[in-house]
Image 1 (cartoon, rainbow, N blue to C red):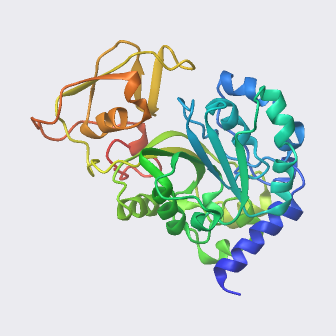
Image 2: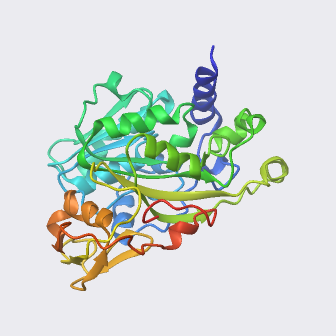
Length: 351
């Protein structure tokens, strides 16, 4: 049995057998600590209790503007985010949940009909598939077939994260979006901590070092990702604090688009973006990332990458873009709070 197989079996055992509810977690890493929007809270009230009790996540990775979209949830567990997305995409949308743990999928599958009834749909728009997030092709998820990939505190558990991100960008349509929450670390995790089953199961042992994540995306052709929010993680456990307390862990929610035209730094073409206020859940402003907040009707200078994210994705009908790339004015001053993620030296375009 190789290291990857051992890691996957450890994770399956932890989430399938050792954890019975989210109250059994030993840290705050796999707890939802992002504030949940009001329109999501209304949907949560419609989701069956068993699904919620066995939900393990570190954020709220659900972007706006999902009506009619095809969404893929990596590591869906009992299906909380799948069912939330199901409501948001509506009957004309479709949501696929992927997980490798039988116990979790059993919970998700037995609530399909009850959730359909609660949402008032004529037929269910969800599909749960068993498999590994490193190999979506084996579950018949085709190239360029998904509008949005979401994931909630799961990619850190993968023993081969590069394969995961390769698969994500394979299945995303051009202009599609990756929107996920996960645990990131201020340094590379020492090998002896990676082999600790509790640390790994609690989403800490496999945490992504932010700079390695940036390099990985760059190698895969994604030159600009954006940070939505980040929150420090409290270990809540003296034993874990003693062995891993030297590392700063954060839950970070990130978005990245599958756009070929992105540049590796923010360039200035004199372009302006205006939010039209046409997204129902957010009529007054649109938050692209932690330092791009577009007020309805207010012109905002934007770099070339930001412009591409607004006009080459599903967001294009909600923005007016003024200007093109015919004239280049040099670097765009696009520094924001995400530039200080964990180290002042982090510089990834607009984040």
